[in-house]
Length: 325
Image (cartoon, rainbow, N blue to C red; front, side, top):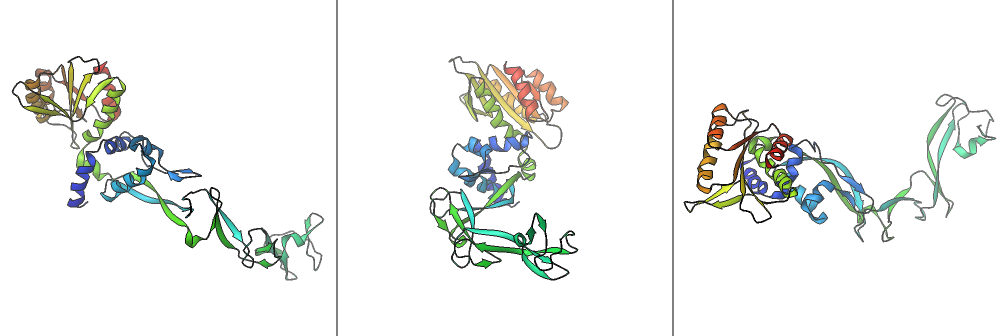
């Protein structure tokens, strides 16, 4: 992934909607995002729509994540939209090439191999059996004494016959008929997470959104990032600032530290203590993913910082639920 894209991704990661969406991949809720077909609107992404809040910006949201390298995509399907009303509720009409009517009937051509007679299947149907109209022998062995020789169509309007019909489209919403060259022809994609993203950012970033959603659901006021002014007059930033909606001054501060190396060092504990000492919150919590080193555990206990070790999103939320109560 290019350095330019990395800068762009850094901007994208700050978007709460992006964090919440990507956390679904991190938690295992999603392994691949596939579109869901709606007869009127075409392919939709309900999971994304629930996050971004507007159906109209869903495709742009996903396209942006793909362009900066956060998501990978592959072609899932192609879809035709009406050029008049933009509806996907479109049917295909197979039409007569002579009069353009779609009132045609389709049948199979059958060849009786021994005598070489070829005609439509209905002409071979005699008294409920396949029988050659020329030599009057019964056809009993497919691909031996008879075979399918193709398709034959007949127009019920002009009574002309042909082998290949021409196609047109009919919009079931606005009742307009249009040709393929007039249609809106679009790609539909499925999406998956680029695994390099996890190495680039760590799991901690994608824990912020689900933790915030969880706490808000429990009735707390949540800010992320959260700023608190300390006794020194300096303003300190925490990944998450939690307070009750009843106006009480009990504030919980949460920081997250994640690593792909297996063990988080004691540095996040030391950095958090410097902030906590100045702001004196009701409770301080550090979430370490996947686990904290031994010296970090001892420092957290000494500094009265509640330490949560979690291998994944579910573990972090479960431990946080027990802590918050």
